[in-house]
Every structure is written in structure tokens, then in C-alpha cells.
Image (cartoon, rainbow, N blue to C red; front, side):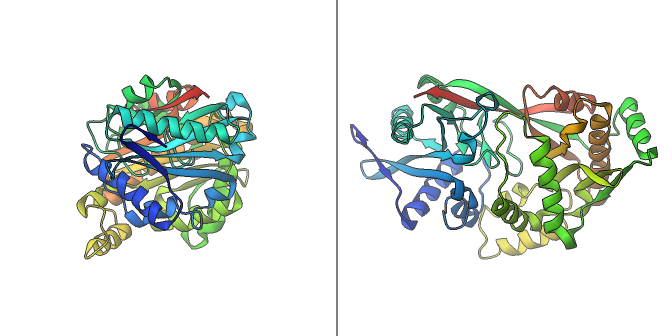
Length: 385
């Protein structure tokens, strides 16, 4: 597709995927407070032979050129599992997505969005959500607040002007995602400590660290709880068996058992909390490059991420306990235990919780009670096709 001297070309092969990734890396390098990610990891995410997301998705990548030079990129994709979900949960029949959005200027942005929309229409879609790059479990939303500091692990970072370009093209906000920062050196307020102590005295409740030696089975326990706990949430798409195995393999180097909690109630798993040390700190130090010596620093860091910030990307309590005092008690117990371990074992001073849906009143109440504050906001937009 072309508009004036802008030509937009579909990606059809390995060389195209490599250029697609490199275009995004160039834009990231020009964005204040962005953190360079590992190129090999980024290539894997857009490789149909490596990323199991492609097993249930239709994907088309595009690169925009002006006078022969790359000036933008976008993905258009359809998650078949998302099409099966109720419309009130965000996706549903007729819903496609765009993601991996980068553009040199507003004209390029408009042409890229139009190209993605046209492809989605050709696929029978009637509505577009984005940016979501590409799975809802990867990097959903456009950063609209918090540009003044670098993102933490597995969170996106975008130029502030993208918001105006997307909204100027007729997109309206569909959902806001929030992240919260937390001073982990500080004890929680007295009321929270009393709730935690009450749970610790309850013989029905047993909280334990993850078992790294049996990590694949632990991941299955966690994702079983996740698929149940989040099943009614906006934007929820269940993990497939292949995605579970893929996640276990990819995330294992980031696993420190003291930072991952599983709670059993009457002997059965009922809740979990996952915490990862912030690899972005070391990636910034090595400029996202493994060679020649970046891999040494990354390996040393992975064994003992001393002083690293921490992020809680996922937490869940079985749905049968939702809207009960027990649910919040289990959450407070897990967060408090990880907070203490992060500070005492790893020397962490800063943590981040999220993302959290802006209408998830239960999680927002928990975040407020532990005195955490919103530090970043992301918007997912929608448009009728």
C-alpha cells in the first residue's frame, strides 16, 4: 500500500522479520527513558516457528518506507481464542488488533493504521483494539502517563506523541491499565500487618516458596489458578498447553523461589503471586547486547540480582474466594512475604505491582492499603471498522 511517497510493505520472510524488529529498536533508541531489549528475544516473539501465540492467531506485519528508508511498522493480528470470548470481556467475535506501532510522523502513523485496519476488514473483523503487541500477555496498551522514567521488566514504553496520533485517527479509549510503585523498605500499615498475622495463625492456610527443581509443575499450578482467577476479567485469554510450556522455559532464568508464592488452603492450591527482578536494569547497562561481554553481566545478575527493582506482574486467587475477606488476606500475606524477602535477601528498595485494570476495585483497594501509588498508565484503544 502507498500514500504519496510512503510505501507500506507486508513482511513475508525471515529477513523481513529481522528488519521489522530492527526498525522498532531504532525507534526505541530515540525514545527518552526507553530500555534496549535483547534482539534475539524480540525476534523470537515475531517468529511463527518459535512463539506458540501463532498457533491460535493470524498475524501480518508491515513496514512503512519513505524514499526507500524504513519510517514505521505495525502488526495486524487476530487471536482466535479471543474471538470466542464474551464481548463484555473486551474481545469477542469480530475483534482484531494492531500492535508493534512505531511511526516517524503523523502521516506515516495514519497510513500504518489504515493498512492494519484494511487487513483486519479483509479477515472479516468489524472492530480493532490496540496497541496490543501481540498477545494480551505480552505488552498491552500505549503508555500515556509515566514517560519520565524507564519501564520495568515486561512493560512497554512509547513516545508521548503517539497518543495524539492514535486518538486523531478516530480511536477511543477501551480500557486503562495501571501500574503501582512501592517502597519495599517500609513496613505495611498496622491494619495490613494485623490481617497478615491473622492469616499466619490460620492452620488452614499454608504459604510456600515455589520449587524451582519442579518448576514446570509449579507453573502448571500457577497457570491453573490464573486461568480460573482471571477468567471473568476484561481482556482475559486463557493460556494454551504449549504457551504454558513456553512460559516455563523462558521465565525459569528469572525465577528466585523466595519471590514466587503459592498458597494452599486446606491442602489445595488457592492463590499465587509471581515476582521477577527487573532485568531492564542490566539490559540498560549492556545496551541490550549480549556480545562481547553482555552475556557475562547478564548471567552474573541472574544468579544474584542484588539491588534490583522487582515487579509483581501476576497474582491470583481462585474465583470461588473472590469478594471474600480471605481473598484480600491471602493477597496481603503473599505481598508482605515477598516484600520482606526482596528487601532482606536481595537488597531491593523499589517494587512495582501491575498491570491492574482500572475497574478492578479489589486490587486497587489492596494497592491503596499498602500505600503504593500509580506510576504508569496504559490505554488500550478501540475503533469500529
